[in-house]
Amino acid sequence: MEYLAKKPFIVIFLLTLIFIFLFGFVFGIENSIIQGHVSAVLAVFLSPRKNKFTTQTGEKTQIT
Image 1 (cartoon, rainbow, N blue to C red):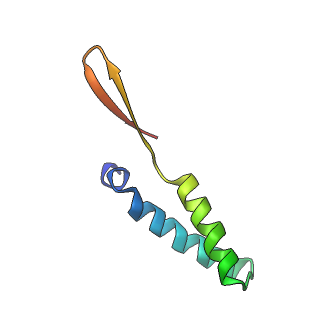
Image 2 (cartoon, rainbow, N blue to C red):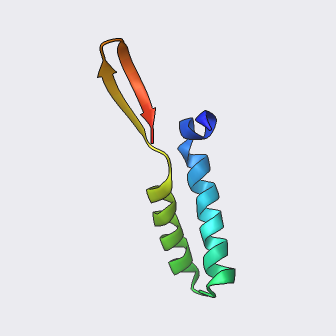
């Protein structure tokens, strides 16, 4: 899981492909521009994020 959190572009790519498949075959949306844009926005919104903050013991990174 930490590997995927360090490389969010892999998660975004996989989520985009999954959403395109869902919109195309499950929901029946035929317009590829709508499929691509909505899928990309959802994938970026759902991808993991890294937050850096400082504690007494040093700098920590939180993956959300």
